[in-house]
Each structure stands twice: as C-alpha cells, then as structure tokens.
Amino acid sequence: MKNCGEAVEDYRYSEFGYKLWFKIRPIFKKLFRVQVEGVENIPQEKGCIIASNHRSNLDPFVLNVISPRPILFMAKQELFQVPLLGWFIKKAGAIPVKRNRRDIGALKKAIELIKEGQCIGIFPEGRRAEPGQFRKPQSGVGLLVARTQAPVVPVRIEGTDIVYPVGSKIPKAGKSSIKIKIGKPLKIEESDNYQQISEHIMEKIKQL
Image (cartoon, rainbow, N blue to C red):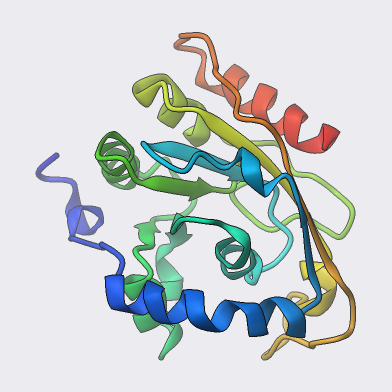
C-alpha cells in the first residue's frame, strides 16, 4: 500500500475521541431529532461497508450517532483544510479523497482498513444530491466491494439537507427531524464491473 500519496497517512480514529463521542451522542440525537430504523443490520464485527445516499455535510456525523461501532468515512480532501473541522475529521479516522478523479490511493487505504476489520462509510453519489433527488453513483464503492468482498449495508438518510443545507454555517436544530433507514447487509457476487455493482447498491438505497 505504499506510494499512494497523502491517503496512506495513518488516519486512524482516536479511541479516546470515540469514547467521548459515544457519551455525548444521545444529546446530539435528541437535539437533531434523529430517528433510525434497522440499526441491528450493521455488523458488530469484521470489516464492512456502509453505503448511504448523500444530502448534507452533516451525514457522516449523523450516521456515527446511530452506529453501534465507529464508521470511518471517505471525505473530500478540502475538508481537511477547514479549521477545527479538519482536525476533528482526521481524529475521526476520515480518509481524504481527491475529487474529480478516481483517487486510487484513498481506495487502497479503504480496502486496507476493511481487511483489518474496520467499518468504512462511503457515499456512492460522490457529492451531495439536490433535495429529494439522487445522483448517479460513481464506481468507487463497486471497486471496494469487488476487492474486499465485504458485506455492504445500504442506508437511506433524509432530512439532513433541511437541518444543514448547502451554504449554511451551522446546523439548525429543530427545523426538521432526520430519518435513517438501514437495510440488511448485501453480499455482492464477484464481478469486475464496478459501475454495475455501484448502481445495484444505489438502487437498494433508493428502495429503503
């Protein structure tokens, strides 16, 4: 996994940070009226992939609020340069991804972590979709599945784009509830058609 640029840095989450986060997340959940269905579908052990639609920059935080285990997200590289937020997501184990092209280094890092037993979160659409809409998925999640054969947990999230819309500086608590539906883990058959795998997963997300 060497020679992959910045993505091979050790972006492991902080054990202390997650213990603290797990203590305060009930407050976050109540403040933003987070409702979840199907949390039992997230595997408690071994490597897995959480694949969710993308509505807001709040999505990774909300999903880590309801997950029984840490989810390490792939995040656009620019977010690591934002004061405080950059420090926070690095401590949360986020993997920096270069946009507008397939970032092989970031994908290799994600594959490595999945094989080590971590839970990796990815947004197949790549970017936030318009309210009520879905973007065409990118092939990255298909590659992760094909290379790891890890179970994929489809997730549909709604309401974060109202609570924290594009352009807002801070989330607006109480403006809307946030609803999350988690499907049963998918076991995808081996294939080298990464785009087809991604589209299959995206359809499962839409059906939730």
